[in-house]
Length: 113
Image (cartoon, rainbow, N blue to C red; front, side, top):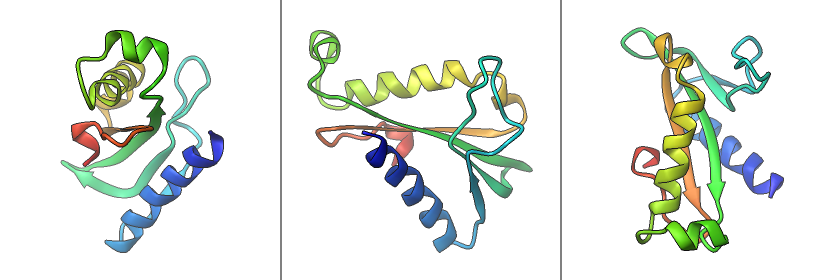
C-alpha cells in the first residue's frame, strides 16, 4: 500500500511540475497537533496568495466498512476527502487545502479531478 501512496504523491508533484509549479513533499513546519503533516505543498501561491497543501489517500472500495456504508461508486473517496478536511481544518486558514482521494476500484473524489 505504501508504494501506491508514494506514487500518488509523486504523480501530483510531477503534474504540478508540468505547469511550472514547484512543490515539496512532506513539508516541515506544517505539522498538526498529533505530529502528522500533509503530503505536499506548493512553493508559490496557488490561489488568493496562498500556497496549495494536499494530503492524498486511497480508500479500499471493498473494505467491509465501505461496503456497508456505501451509497454507490465514489462514496468511499468522497467520505475520505471529508475526513481529511476535518483533520486539516486549521491549515485551511493560511493555505488552500486539497484532499486528493481515490478508491482502489477507480472513483476519485470530485475535488481530486
